[in-house]
Image (cartoon, rainbow, N blue to C red; front, side):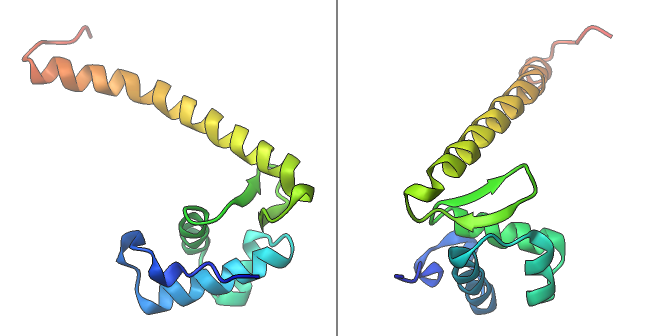
Length: 120
């Protein structure tokens, strides 16, 4: 399999160590499902760091991460299609939820910026 070359991406100006971690995790999840805890144990990372590395990888290659706690896996072939669709749908749902939550904040910012008072 072709390496994903995280080191060539300008993603957040990662350090060399971060690039190596991303590439190593990408190789692991290309082979099979890996749970967050397994990645934490292998790389001695906390949960937030694992999520960050997965996020950086997923900006470059298709990563399956579904809510059934199965873990992470790189989408590679037609066998991964249904999981890829499920991940895509979960991401779209999350985006919709965030947009709905952002709307009142956006309205507040606009009204306050115009000098208007809000109802209490």
